[in-house]
Image 1 (cartoon, rainbow, N blue to C red):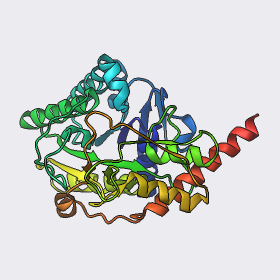
Image 2: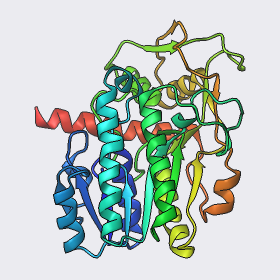
Image 3: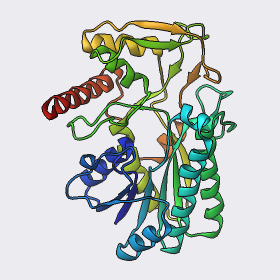
Image 4: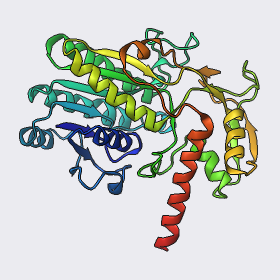
Length: 331
């Protein structure tokens, strides 16, 4: 049995789908603060509760023979983390501490952690290797790095091995329309751009057009969420194959698109022309964030299937249109 925390959220729900498609048995814990009940398949047990609740975890681990934990639960908005750091250290570090302790006590053999490229801060290298200096510039990245350190320290004293996957920019939706980005207040560029293309907002802000890039706008490594989910299946297989080894690796495609290139692609896919407003740079935004994927290629038996910006946007658009239809039907 696999325990997936945050399995009703955006990335977690896609991981659950990928695990179920691979024939795994899954149970989900989610407090539904940002997740949705209907994002969890009907045949997957959903326990509504806090993934850091020690009593709840003890009950779950005693009732289920959990082989591995895939930990997605947490808070993920960079701006919110600056405004409310206590929430981020409580939700990300405190919850993870309780979960890791409960997993160790229950004899769980593998632990897979959802981390982020935000641990690098403003990186000095491009593309970014995993051993690049870690210097997060916000509480979100700092909280994730603390959990990485926790897992590294625990590995010294515990037979439980772990994998840390550092995500770059996740976008898109399940190609079969089973899940997508539904988090309230999501600030991802593609989500925002599609809202503009669908008439839900009056345009998109571009924060800085004077970076040392081809068109002056920042470049990011965008990965389709279903490819990311499949990478978790491969990472679990790697943990099972070598129980004495833990690892950390970037999950991205190894190349990027500028903000203007992404907006051009949204225009192309939707047939709309999004209004673009140039704003001053945001403090701490690096010109380029692209993953060095050398280690990922060596570690994981996984090949991306959706490495195409137009495909990422088309799947995200189909999901947004589905959400619009649901809203219209409910009114």
